[in-house]
Length: 191
Image (tube, rainbow, N blue to C red; front, side, top):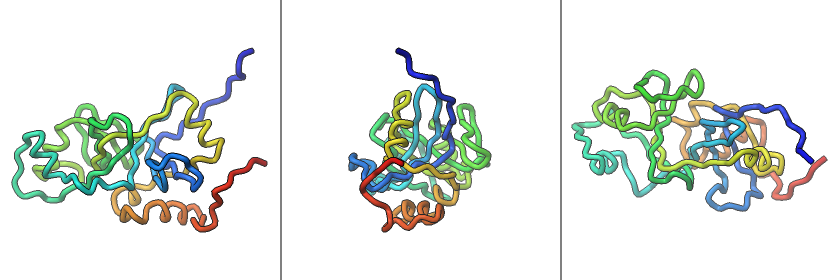
């Protein structure tokens, strides 16, 4: 017996907000920006887990990218448990090179060393967030998790990605949705 085909609605460019009952500590109080969502699966970056022991200057040194005085140092986040050796840069849409993916009119993703060099020279995007790794889901997995109340979805906001302090992002997004986090239950139910 085949499963009835359902219409697909992409959540690309949206936030996923971890619910209190999530059973994976890697995603406890996580806010994830989905940069890909197709019927084949999804991928996103956890935007509220700073990599406290890694700096932009260290990444430049490892990649042997020369730099003088930096205009700004983007923060490095632990973007998720998958593809951890890969770097992903979320940035404002005022910058583009070959390979830049436009997620929405305000936010792009670039995963090449060109952007790191340009940031180091002060000619990169006006705002950026560098991610080590990402979170991925296979076909149907994310949809099943959403139906099981593991995640809430919300419209993404570039201010949250680039300006809200990391420790406040989970509460901030919930509050923006009109939800006070202390009222969220760890029990889930279905109507």
